[in-house]
Length: 226
Image (tube, rainbow, N blue to C red; front, side, top):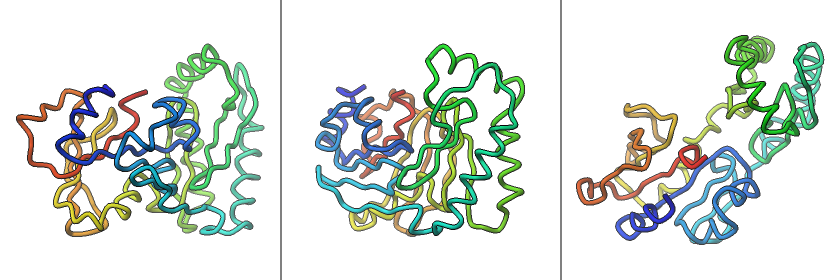
């Protein structure tokens, strides 16, 4: 996959966007990831790198305020305390620059425990019920709650999903931006600028660079690499 993207990069700029922080991105894609791609957007672009250099950094606490952040954390911990699971481990809330990552089982779980929780979650909808409760409790606060990955829930200000990174590429005047990954849909989506039309395509790494030379910029959804 890395070789494929490097060959594709010879024809057009390539970006990486994901919800994890830079440290986790480097664990998965290598310590030199910010040098290997034109754009790297950890935390959905709240932290942005261009041409190997830090472009900017935004923080959730600066946007929402400490009072609301504490209300969120306290409520989540209280909710998790009432959920009975086969196992619970550590790090139930991970504080990132652009979001809170909330995990009912705890991010400190082993791979075996992660799989066990995933199976239970598929049957009992543990995270979906949690999300619905959070949406009701914090309605009108400008906060998005969404299921993330296998064991967690992402909490971030409205609009701070993967679309956020589009604001960093507007200066390139790209006519078309493609997102592709393992959880995308073939629809035309909203973009920050009329110049940026975002098309979603679940290519799973089988994109033919010779047959499809038209796009001027390709956004790589990290999930396809996991």
